[in-house]
Length: 248
Image (cartoon, helix red, strand yellow):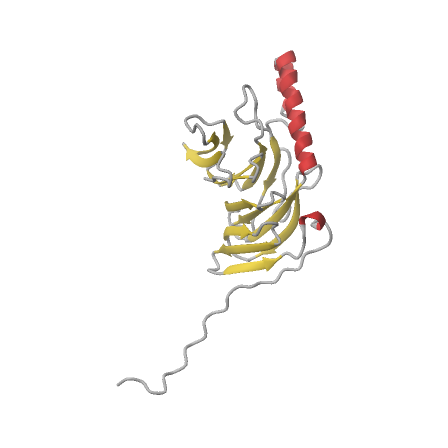
């Protein structure tokens, strides 16, 4: 579950009869969800962007799905998929346990059992375009009925996932998310976090280490060049020096 800093919305992920389900609630009420999202497998991670306009859902289905939730709760409104990024792994399942938006809302980070931690920047103009397309489809459905509904699933802003990626990166054609950093930890990543602008990335996982990476970039130029990272995994404690005067 996730409660953003303004406490206006609450996101919850769950498993129901083997399938995944995610909800977004208005915390002023909380009795009925504003919107419900159906997924084929258990949802293990949900996050709301700082202004609560986007919701990230991930888990057992080995994918990150990003929704627009600006109109959640409005009569007849749906929450369109902005992008879907699918993952595979060479070391086992590519489950996702952890994701976070940066405090400034400009990036989302993700930890995957594939052994990678990712940082993605967010294209707000593209997200708005998809959301606007979805609103136009809603208006068309109201005017044209079933014919518009049958077409919508294959159009920007529809209910079907927008895009998918491979093991190493998201697809970038017409993408809302652009991969800025991919850190290979070699073992399952269980938890990730970052600072306000995602210029510092913290990763923990199966290797029993917590590592901090300096992404050395700002969101405004994240698309340029490769990113050098410095592993700051804590070194093992040295063996204690023998006591020159041991007790008998």
